Image (cartoon, rainbow, N blue to C red):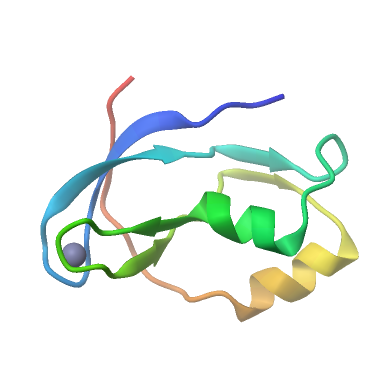
Length: 84
Ligand SMILES: [Zn+2]
């Protein structure tokens, strides 16, 4: 099972940086997560302004359901800095 890495991301709403855990890979064939679980992992809330930011994993092993979910997600370019 994969684990999140510590990163800093720049909030596109207020421009402040904050730390969060980034899931670089999510494998739905190994971990049968619900759409809500996946959404919780990839969504990060800015502690400064409350904006919700979606970070897409580098690697996604997926199912048909995920493809539908992915097509719906918000597209934003996020600045990211790896801490580990
Ligand atoms: Zn913010």
